[in-house]
Length: 250
Image (cartoon, rainbow, N blue to C red; front, side, top):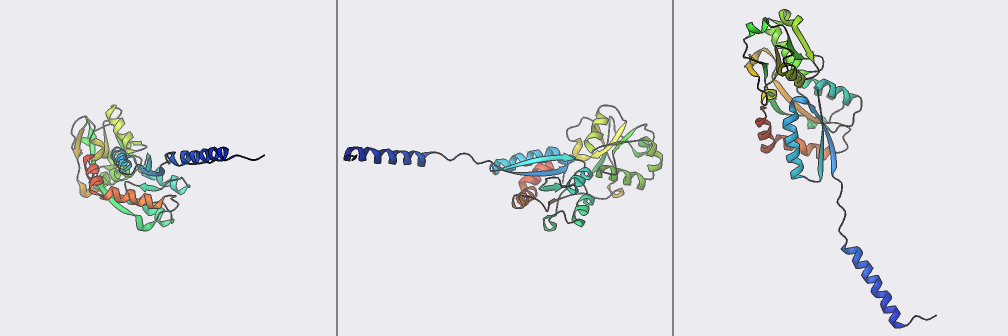
């Protein structure tokens, strides 16, 4: 059966219209590239704001955070947790990962600092601290703030006296909770943890414990090493550092 010219024209028009329709369709939204950032819990408030601003600048990227005690997070990475970036509240955890070849060494960067303080319902002297019944610190085995606190008390000559009174917490934020709920008389936390607290803050002699410097590095098995490096650069930028200072770091 022969197809007449009119039918042919209609067929050609239909094909052209269909092709035009396909070309005019808008491409579907692409799913953002995700990275996972494990970080010391003391960084939680600051990093959440930094992450939100980074994502605002880079809507094609999503940053997922995993906060906890630095020692616990380090062990998770050793056990093959899916992590792209790690920031610790001390050098020890990053050192351990570097020794085992689990970080990209050239990405290791110190990006902020902190201070150790005593938090309580009222200001305290070291002499008054010795007379308290319960003092909370992070568990020195996994919590850098706990190690800093123990070192401070040892160098101040009060550790043996206060040792029976110590209540160990899983992380520095738990120390803060214990104090705010009245479950202990005082606690050692970072200055950054006190920004939103109504408790009284007592400064201590910074020379009696190691400098508190936060390192960050890209994990060797990261699926997104380039984006992870980009986030480290943002942490070091003026914008990132301004947010960190807002939360008591620096």
